[in-house]
Image (cartoon, rainbow, N blue to C red):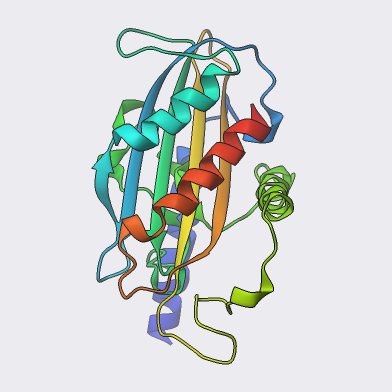
Length: 238
């Protein structure tokens, strides 16, 4: 009984703390709602996998290949990368590869979050929104969930269907099982430069199809799928 009461108190405290961190002057929208004009931007691209405890760990920061996919895609839309100084937008890209069934989502199974140490100044200010899971709508509108579904639908429509190599969820041949399956997760956070008390951030989340089943799911197993999902998100939401 005492343990139940303690758990209820801790849950209530967590909810209150979460509410206290919300900024009333900050509007959080899905990336599909972004409608501002093109401009210059700063960029951070981080790649993660999951450690043995199911926690995200940084594998590489600003990988030239991953960064190149972003800059080339946005250049066709008129966006210019700035390597120093202020810019119109700050763009954060966080890519994760892992067995999502083994991911640690926190004490109350809340969210699979980007490590605070990897957020940087802009991310730390809005750290409550830097997570890959769960897939749920923003501000109760469900728009972000629809963005995720749209992204995966577009990817399905673009991909040529080949049932000869069909696999079950987890990468194992149909009828077989595997203890590990690897999947990529994409998180994109666009923060326009603040010009007043009212501010906005735009968030996009996406998931790849299952990648090759490899124990512990090292990040490179998902790299190609993550690149594809990231480019598709940028192409269809900017």
